Amino acid sequence: MGETQAGQNGLTRIERTSDTKLVVTRTFNAPARLVFKAWTTPELFKRWWAPKSLGMPILACEMDVRTGGGYRLAFGHDEASSFSFYGRYLEVIPDARLVWTNEEGGDGAVTTVTFEDKGDLCLLTYSDRFPSKAALEAERGAEDGLPEQFEQLDALLAEMA
Image (cartoon, rainbow, N blue to C red; front, side):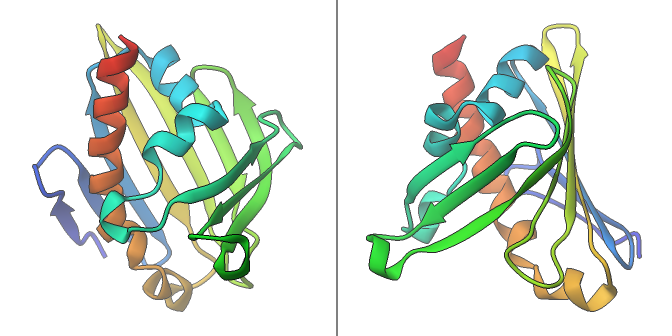
């Protein structure tokens, strides 16, 4: 517990705060409303969510961003070889908070993302709460991918500003 690591460029902080919870923080050079928009607009989300190093584009991105709404992301080079992530939004507070389920596997996390204005910057806190320690251990990919994803989000936010 309490295991901490910094992302590739030191801007993304990753910490295991318990056996079942992963917390990632990053400050973005944009107001919370723009960062929230990049998380909730399918055309924007598709541009930054998939780490380029994976070489696996997002084929489809469906988002009904409201409490009780659902989402579905399909990754791959074509429909035949694609795989999907999906779930539903448990809480949506515009420009401030998103909470969703990850239902593609039996041990999916509940993800919470908060957006907090700090002057002209946004402090983003991303946390995954898993049902067990084993489920968290099985999802080490998020820890590896999020720093790269957040760098891609930085680049998109610079274009949007």
